[in-house]
Length: 344
Image 1: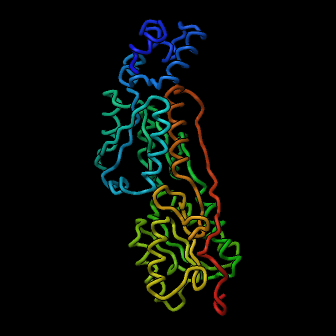
Image 2: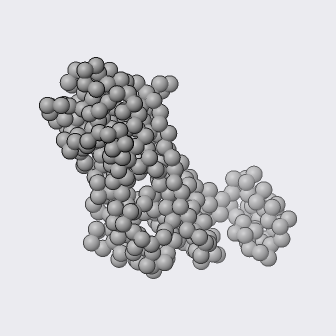
């Protein structure tokens, strides 16, 4: 049903119906409720372009992908976040736009988007420890939200993040409680803020247990299946190989499992494995019993919440800064068990 048909059904002018749906104060509450009920009943959604002309907004949220992060577009974690965000955008009448920017012209890309009115706000993903994009957007005084945080940025800004440090501290402690002492960390790129926090949690747990970190058991690179396989294969060759491995993503953990299987080792019996980010739509961690013990955090839910927070920022630019820290759940699966006898 279009606007004309909805207005005819209600016996009201198209202008009145449009103003009622867009929250104009001159439309009385009774009429607004009647119009909203009819719109819901008939499945009518306002045209975002028309709504934008009426409100002076573009009704579009932007996602700017740096050229160095194009691989993120095929990452299931990125996909789940966007799926969650797009659901919330649609509920509020917003569209979503992806655009690419060269790493040397990020500021120009953002300024261009806002100056030509292409977007009302932007989502920043994958922040680094010292993230220049946050400072650029803060200086521009435009609506944005960060999926993650940046340790090196002093300015206040809206963000939503999972508690990476406590998640990895808890996971490491879980392995220590099982008797493991040679615990490896296969982390993401450690100029990324999330990876540095995960490493800090891992190191804190070792320190509290009186264990000395071994550089040979700490690896850092882009989180791919091939990376997990390669690093696990190499660590199994050292004089004192790990009895447990912490993998910083489910994708990496799949590579870890492949390397163990090729070496004739069984997860949970010969070597324990814990993965992060197991709650992915297209990469499920088993059915009734999880394959991997994992720190579970729904990226899709984070996308929904981030979008809601950004839309509130667009509506209320002067509102207090919003910060939301999510706690991951440790889910015990078949990939962990006591340290093998004789290597505790």
